[in-house]
Length: 484
Image (cartoon, rainbow, N blue to C red; front, side):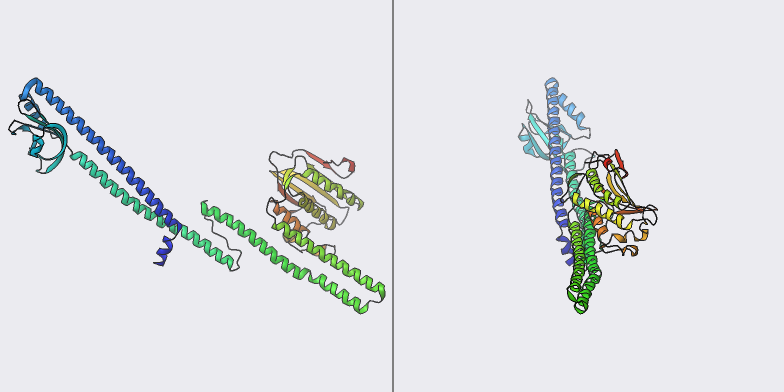
């Protein structure tokens, strides 16, 4: 009973009941309309047939008298069809016809009106049962009365057939409606129960739970796909929050401990103003390092919490890339390196220019810090090209690269490979680039070039831009750099 009550309270049951009621009423109305009009049409045909018979017999009577009418009626009465005839004299005695019994009032009221009567048919092969007919009665000269009619048996059988069809149809509609409701309710309730179970799993702390996608692309599949994407985003944000918490607990413990140690050492060992000043400067350096970490974390958190499309505007990436190249080319040349630029025309997109600039700066800074080759000078390449409707921004170097097994891990917060721990940094630069790429619907990718490493992010290109024209600058002549 509880399960039945649960089903009857569902929207599927209410909708099925509504559809069943509407469809039943429409079906009944349609069949009633067909039956009514069919009966009316058959009645008109009966009237037309009776009138035609009367007219024909009247003409025969005028031309040949009673004898000719008797012969005609006798000949027609022998055919087993639906036509009815009866001719009586002035005393009411039957002269000819195929009607055995008939209410006397029908012959007495020979006014030519159309009547529905009950009668018994005459004939050796006819059952002695009452039938229904439509008749007209006329009085002829000499006191004769002529009755012509049409048996309604076929019409009544057709009406009964339609009535039975209506009943069978309504029963079938009800049965099919109930079966449809049971099927739909079970299917809908099963999907809803699956969603409820997944929701309970997620509420219990398992964020990896996902809704089932059956692959038939119905409304439940589309809802499941969207909810799964939302759950994936929530899981990623929660995992990021846990990672940040864990990373802060581990990675900030060392600088905080070092800061505390320096203060204690200064209080215990420092002598004079110079000693305390040196200790305070060391403490300020550690504090600045901590502030940089917190600022980077906050910026990454803000980027990851931004909605796609937020604070974005149409931009020309060629001008942006060349502007960054102008800033870093002199710096690299001062260090004895070489800066190359490969930029296509028509790189129009909708983006957050500040964040894209920051991502490129981070990638270039990483190349400057960790991309130095063992022999020779550093070569950094900045590329912006169109590829399959996407704009790919790449920064390459000719250094040792990153092992493939570590390429996904270095995108996480505070991750620094062993070879890079001697360089200053927070381990958050690539995490910020990854967040910027994801905000713009792209991804941060690494590719070892042997030698060197290429780090790239991709953005959606504005429609109608092909980026087919290229301009290249190898850093040998700064005046040759195209300007916006």
